[in-house]
Image (cartoon, rainbow, N blue to C red; front, side, top):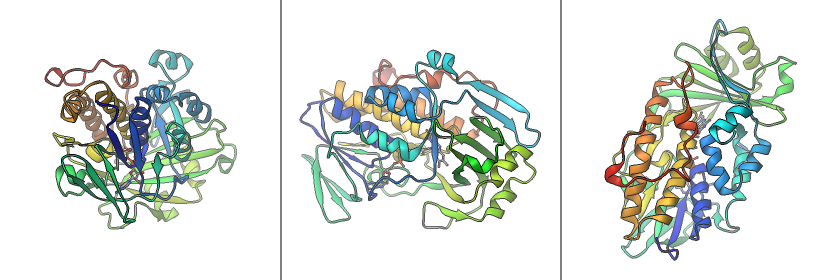
Length: 384
Ligand SMILES: Cc1cc2nc3c(=O)[nH]c(=O)nc-3n(C[C@H](O)[C@H](O)[C@H](O)COP(=O)(O)OP(=O)(O)OC[C@H]3O[C@@H](n4cnc5c(N)ncnc54)[C@H](O)[C@@H]3O)c2cc1C
C-alpha cells in the first residue's frame, strides 16, 4: 500500500504497539491512541514464547527483553495433590536454538517500557479514549472522549476485549463472561523463606489450576496466576482485591509446596475472564481489528498476547507488501493467513490442555510471523 497512507492504531496494548512499530519501520506514518494516562507496572507477568520473540527481533527489542526476562529451564506441569510431574517441556539453550529464539517470562510493566522504545518518538498519545469513528469514504475521523479529533486513511482496532472499534466493524455486542476468574499476585521471593521452586510450574487441579513463575532475571519477585470458577461477575472494574482466606480456600488440599507459595502472597487480586465468539470477518472498509478485539480467548495456553502480536506482524506485512488494489486486498490476505491459526489456538485454550501432557510445540513456537510465506486467500489451508 502507498506509504502516504496515514494509519491510526487504537490501543497501545501488546498487539497495537507491535503493529505500530512494524508499520513505522515499513515507512508508514502511524499514530497510536491509548485511553490510559500512562503505562503502569500492574501486577502481572506474561510468557513470551519464541514465536513472539521472533517478532520482537524484527522490532529490534529482542535483546533488551531477553536481558530483563527470566529464561526458564523448563515448563513444568504437576498434579495438584501429589505433586507428580505430568510433563516437563525443556526450554533451555538447546531448545532456544531449535525454536529459533528464547522463551521468557517477563513483567508486563517492564515489557511495555521496552516496547515503547520501538516506536517513533511522539507517535503514541495517552488519554485518548476513542468515542466514535466516522468513515467518510475518503478519510476516517476519530473522536476521543477528551473532545479532540484525528484523521486517518486506515484504522487498526487493537483496543482489546472491550473494543470500541469492533462496534464500528460488527455493530454492538459485549464479550461473554466465561464463568472463570483469575487470581493474580506478585510478591517478593524473600517471602518464600528459602523454599526452592522451579522457574515456571503449572499445578493442574480439578476444575482449577495455578501457575507460579519468576518474571525477572534476578528472581526477586514471584508471580501467581490461577483459574477458578465463579458463577457471576458483576463488578464494573477490570479487577478487585480478593480476600486472602477466600483465595487460600480455593486451593485447599493442594500439594504442601504450592500451599507454602500461595500462603506467602500478602495481597491477591481477582480478574474476570471474558471471551468473544468466533467471527468470520475482522474488517470493514478501511478499518481492521487485531488481537483480543477480534478473537479474545480464554488464557489457558498463555498465547492470547502471542496471537495479537503475530496478527500485528502479519497485518503489517499485508499492508506493506500486498494491497496494491487497496485495503480490502490486504485485509483478505491478513484474515486468510491468521484465522486458521488463531482458531486452532482458541480451541486448545478453551480446552485447557496445553502442556498438561507430552506435546510437540514446534507448530506454535517455530512460527515466524515476519517471514512465513503468505498464502493467497483462496489457497489458505487450515492450520496444521
Ligand atoms: C489472567 C490472564 C493471563 C494471561 N497470560 C498470558 C500469557 O502468559 N501470554 C499471552 O500471550 N497472553 C496471556 N493472556 C492474554 C493476553 O493478556 C491478551 O490476549 C492480550 O493482552 C491481548 O492483547 P491486545 O493488544 O489485543 O489487547 P490489550 O493488551 O487488552 O490492549 C488493548 C489496549 O487498548 C486500550 N483501549 C481499550 N479501549 C480503548 C479505547 N476506546 N480508546 C483507546 N484505547 C483503548 C487499552 O487500554 C489497552 O491498552 C492472559 C490473559 C489473562 C486474562
